[in-house]
Length: 69
Image (cartoon, rainbow, N blue to C red):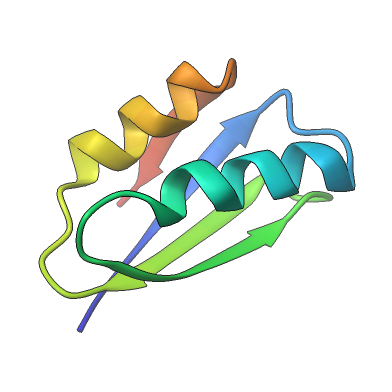
């Protein structure tokens, strides 16, 4: 099981979180998406997902994203 955190800029409400959860959840290998709107934090858990595809899903939804190392 892999877990990766991302910092997302521009996420301001529950609707934003729902959009991101839906889009990220479609990435192959993603099992769980945790979102904290207040801190702009997104935590993705799963088996062998591609982090670049997670970043692309977030960017395609209109948000800026940075992986947290």
